[in-house]
Image 1 (cartoon, rainbow, N blue to C red):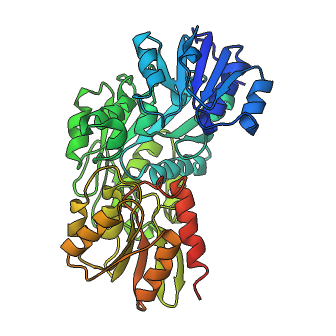
Image 2 (cartoon, helix red, strand yellow; image 1 turned 180 degrees about the vertical axis):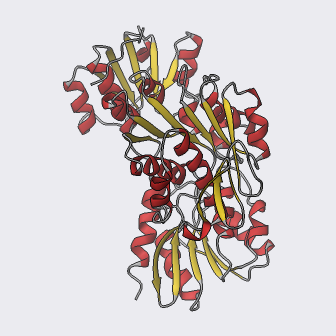
Image 3 (cartoon, rainbow, N blue to C red; image 1 turned 135 degrees about the vertical axis):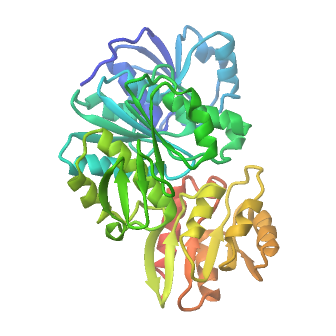
Length: 449
């Protein structure tokens, strides 16, 4: 088990439990730190609360009293808690450092970390990189925002292993010295403004992935994304571009027949089973990271010739009475839904809606030309109705939830149609997670006869 050897803090407040908070508290306790936990929504008899108290933690639930800051010299906060939280505001006044669990994980290991971020495609790219390295018979572990807590992985990570980590902007805001050997910045679009308040704040949070990199580290970036290319100008690391439209002598690229890394042909496009131009970008980013980490072409080929995608990201569910159903519940912003819609050319029924973050949806209009019908739900239903009408879609139907939307979409469909769940919104108005929302979609599809 790896230890927090270079960790100058002794009294730590873990703000917010869930998986990452529970794991962070456990690591800190194992390293003989004085741990106080504060969670607003937890209750006294929760399993995690009882477990951590049994390990010696002080746990305060149900409120956020300022007294939880007494004698504290570090806060490890749940990534989802905004910095406007009054406990955090007071902590900043007292100059108490605030980190997220990913910073803690990096202090547990000296092994190489491959970090992936961007507005869209993180999970697909992270999974591809992990599988490419694994299929090349190298030791590698998967962690981060993909659902596997990074501290739990780093705790057991061997020095010769590599850790592939999906990173959100929320996680990256809470770093001090986190330094991935390989950083991947896929793309940037307006997202999470309810949390970050401005686009610039959001982009700067993403930029933290290369903040501490040095000249012997690598930064893989999307050469076609103007926001990305502008943001990376300050990076000290060696920049490795990828592009689906132009040759990149220092990075990854594709022509009409094949994909390449620098001057080396990797494989033919016809042998790749993952569909969509956005996925080709993800593939080129993954190939770059894998090659720089020591993966071989055989391992890369094996993955790309068999990998069909991750759950909730353009996941093919079933064909029912000649209608094809796709689950893209992980599309929690407009850009993700744009990319999903661009992957199909046949008549499509779009299921969309969810948490209202205050943005409009006009940027969807150019991508709705082959959408014959929309079924909308959640807090943004009225906004999406307006956009559907603006795009000239005659059939825009409101549903109570995703399950209801599936049935209403099927009732308006014809053989040959695609029925696509790609919400363009977060799920938190009706569902705990996008996974829960996607699972409800899948379950509903399988009840259609």
